[in-house]
Amino acid sequence: MSNSEEIVMNVFWQTPEPLTVSQLSRLLVGQDWSKNYIHKVLRWLSDKEFIKVVGIAQEGRYQAQQYVPTLTKDEYLAYMLEEQGVNNSLFAHIAVTLFKKDRKQRTPEQDEKLIAELEKMVDEYEAQIEEKSKEK
Image (cartoon, rainbow, N blue to C red; front, side):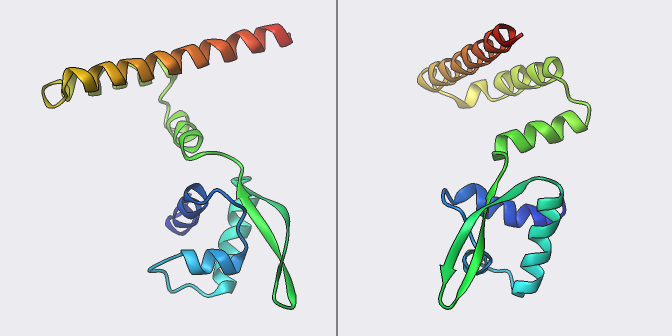
């Protein structure tokens, strides 16, 4: 993903509702981009299937397409890690290393919260695996 595409995707990931080009233009704070350039970035993202059109909105006298992301930021990051050759096993080792590295800076309560979150993620993953096996 290019820098421009990432900037636009971050706006999508931070906004819960579908966005038009005009809405994106207002939300792209600090970017002096023309609407034509925003259209171009949206076309690139659409070609890569990172966004899709979900409807039409009335904007004054005109109608505008509304876009939403097709994946969450977490899903995109997982996709990028996989593209770089980071598999689930290696990722688990990285997570444990990061957990150990910051141990001195965390309170026991923070540790408990993190462990609970990790356990929840493992439970959700196991449920997905079980669901997939039932589909076969």
